[in-house]
Amino acid sequence: MRAVIQRVSHASVKVDDEYTGQIGLGLLVFVGIEDADNAEDAAWLSSKIVQLRIFNDLEGVMNRSVCDVGGDILLVSQFTLHAATKKGNRPSYIRASKPDVAVPLYELFKSHLANDLGKPVPSGIFGADMKVKLLNDGPVTIIIDTKNKE
Image: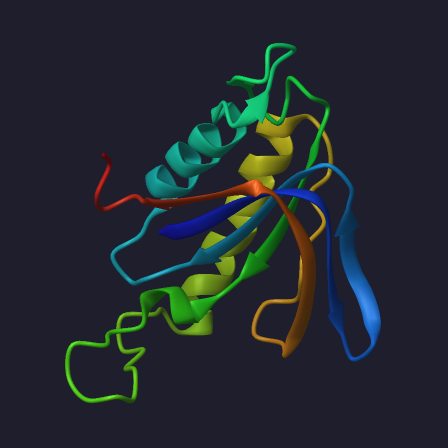
């Protein structure tokens, strides 16, 4: 699983001109799933995200997690995170899982996030054409790949 995590002041996602999720202070998480991903990846990534200390403490040091600040998480599926760009100028998405594999793992990941965060996690709609709006705070953007745990 590959995730792009952005610390936001607010974020929202719309499908067909209707909001499917919106948050104030928190994290906007884009996630891409490949066939090699599994339930352990979902659990590990969720735990890592909710514990990331990327919010400022009283001294202005990034030392607090989304849980510590009472923030929310907005989850958006994004198969393009697995784009292969080595050859040519048209990305290949061959590594991105098809919906029959990706949707159950996406839902499991969303469930882990809600459990680890202690509250519901709003989201986009898997596979839909989504419009995402955000105000990146910092800016702070972190990339995590469960196949490359640095």
